[in-house]
Image (cartoon, rainbow, N blue to C red):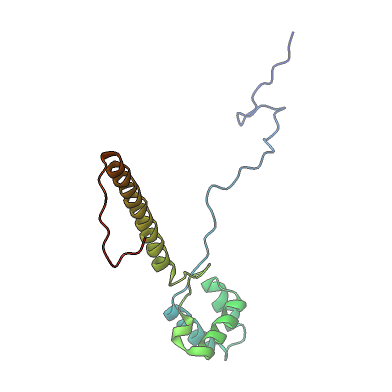
Length: 144
């Protein structure tokens, strides 16, 4: 006779262990971005909170910020004012000449294909004229 696990009161089998496999996260954490106005508002609130003990910490907890945010935002504000607080795009900076370079490369490739076709047509015309015995007249300013 075989032993069969019977479900207990909660409906789970008595000898069954939970699955130890970790399930991967399906969503990717995204970096938060703050507007320049929000950063300026937070810095103003920090100045107002300086008179109260623990006020800055309470503000940071309430807004979900870190003290490093304040440090970075103060430096940015000191450097160039409100414009410096505007979020910058992360990653490699786009080359301003890249679009023009790509356009010129496409045009160059197109012109090379056109030149190859013209050379083929000229070669075919030369062979045809030789086969028919027609001599091509050269212009006087053209050198052989």
